[in-house]
Length: 336
Ligand SMILES: [Zn+2]
Image (cartoon, rainbow, N blue to C red):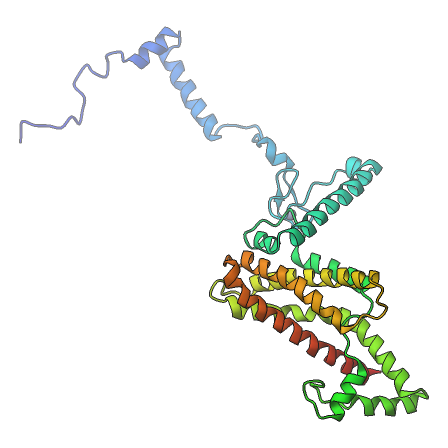
């Protein structure tokens, strides 16, 4: 133990012997002392200790300005937090830019619109599947699609879902609950209102029916959350959250409105002047096939397993519409 010393100090002569580093310095003509000073000052330079000049900032530091939209730092032409683009008045406030924007907006809208409706109608359920899988930028957002279709539906679909007043009045008179779910004496009320307004009950009934037909187009979208609840109940094992079912219901409902419009035009072309309740049957059959294919694709079940849910959903839709048109007609009769 005593004879063994760890090498705390190097053996004599080792430090004095010129190492490869010293040979290198000498070979490049540097004096030992000078080199030492140089290396100290360069080390200080690196640490910024004896530098009297203002510190040189990196190039990007000069361009960092707060984002005018969110206030965060924006090092480049786009804000990393909110995506706001840096304003360049020479370009962004020029007429050329405006013309480009209009053209781009119209063309993009056009492409997106065609792609969205094309996917919706040609591949039932694919648009919903795309949204649920995160493929969203190339097609319209579900609610935008719904609002756009609703506006078109409102403008072109003349008489939507209103219950004929006489049918409601007869159901009340006969005590039939199914034909007048709110059990509202619409005949009696309208007769009394007609006397007060100096008109006939028939004219008032016609006015209520027409107005309810208009109003029903606005609030028909209220059926979407209810259809979504039906889908949620049918497929909760496959998808426990409600919102995916809501998106599915929204897309299916848009197709339903489009089918309505197509069938209305078909009926008109066939020469029918008044659209009757019979119209609903071919509409339901056509829409039913779409729902069947869509449910199969959205929920990833085969064709045959999708058949039962399709029948349930169509029955629910029919029942909801029958209730809806009674309610809207009664509400309009109350408010008239
Ligand atoms: Zn921002």
